[in-house]
Amino acid sequence: MAYYCSFKPSLLFLLFFIATSQARDSITTHLHFFIHENVNRPNATAITVVNSTTSNPGGFGSIGIFDDEIREGSSIDSKLIGRAQGMAPEVSLSEMAWLLLIDFVFTDGEYNGSSLMVVGRATLGGTIERSIIGGTGKFRMARGYTINTFLSGAPEGRLIDECDAYIVH
Image (cartoon, rainbow, N blue to C red; front, side, top):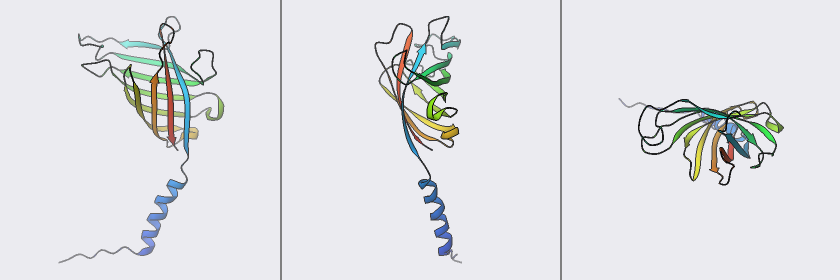
């Protein structure tokens, strides 16, 4: 016996309307900022909380946490606009690579009180792309990606990471 399935035109229109209305209500935002990490004590913003017990290169299995500054520019004196808070377990047996879980918490400006959750791989060279998997405040229901590049020439014990975030929310 053959089955016959038919959609009524009004049901198809309703499904189309729902799909397109969600796309029209989305906003795309591009943010450009710099993450400043300091490993110098006593004012370190990143520390290792679990040391690796393996002899593999790069410390496979170690876990670091961080509460880095988000600034408008690459200068240490540029305006503070938030914090990059998260953790970074080393996940590679063959190179220095981490799985970063970052919450960008904005504390000044237009996005004060909003945050972005970012997940992805990190290495110390080249350009890195990570996924934006959510957000709060003005970034509620966010999705998108970040492009990160470590800047050379940072003072000893500091890492400066240039970040471009492309956010749909």
